[in-house]
Image (tube, rainbow over all chains, first blue to last red; front, side, top):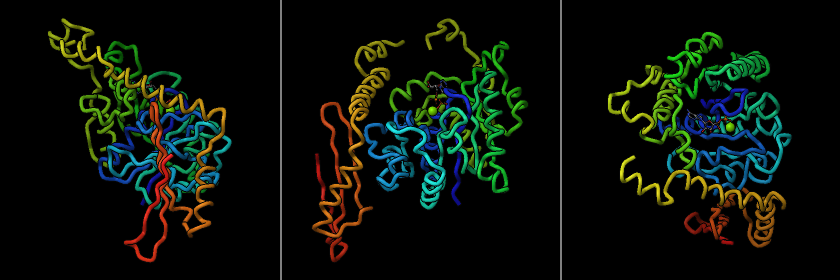
Length: 271
Length: 96
Ligand SMILES: Nc1ncnc2c1ncn2[C@@H]1O[C@H](COP(=O)(O)OP(=O)(O)O)[C@@H](O)[C@H]1O
Ligand SMILES: [Mg+2]
């Protein structure tokens, strides 16, 4: 049974694309046939984060408009088996995405893949709505910051009322919270919302906490999903979140600040 | 920063340098196709039309692979030509 997972947030720049790339890669590494689909038509970026930008030939709009078939548009990842990418179009606009077209593509993807990860654009307009419309599960990416939490709440409302599951009266989309860019030191100093606060406000299960980490930038520089970076705290947190998603009971890490030794305190900022 | 890191960062192997190179390549190609239209779908369609004048080809059995490079890009079009037996089935490659 295949599942459609939307990575959504309402707000832009919170880590949806970083999460989509990491999560899809993680699912594939665990042996599941996975495809990650970029819904950000006009502002394609997933290809850069996945490192396949030089190999994009056709995109989701070409498939919707019948100019290419799905097999031709899918890009196989060169590092991880079982992983494919369906890029967004860079030249067309969001109106080229149609509900019928997206449904047809997702149904076809369901025949081949176990997991279909949909990287949503920001906002609640057409692109974002279509990215979540057919979802079975939602990963709500939120930063510990007021506007992000409010926008996530708004997206939860859309999931509950305007998803296909809601319209069909089927069991609701399963929503899970992924708190990203979490800085435990700032939380401890009272400068940043605590995970408990955010979870209490949004009242959905916690899938994971991804720490603020410099390795996210270096990974994106190189087009490597951060989950493939060995020494990255964010990468480890993503791997934990994938395990939890697959039903394993994994304790949350990176919730409290790293205890710094004398040596690293002496050389603060060097790391 | 260790001594090794110091020498490493002098060469263009920093991740920032990798990012700059990747962006230069991808943007150079995007700027070209921004003004012109997407020619790849049409190219594929017309190639298939020409080939299907000579052999029966499955329109879905064409795979286009692209690698955008700095100086050269390669476009590889693979079309399976149906043959009497499976062993004999061949692929035709067109490199542009
Ligand atoms: N855990 C993290 N630590 C540090 N930076 C992050 C983290 N997650 C995301 N970022 C940065 O935040 C920015 C936005 O991320 P992105 O995934 O593109 O967000 P979105 O797709 O929601 O717009 C990027 O510059 C990315 O490198
Ligand atoms: Mg994005």
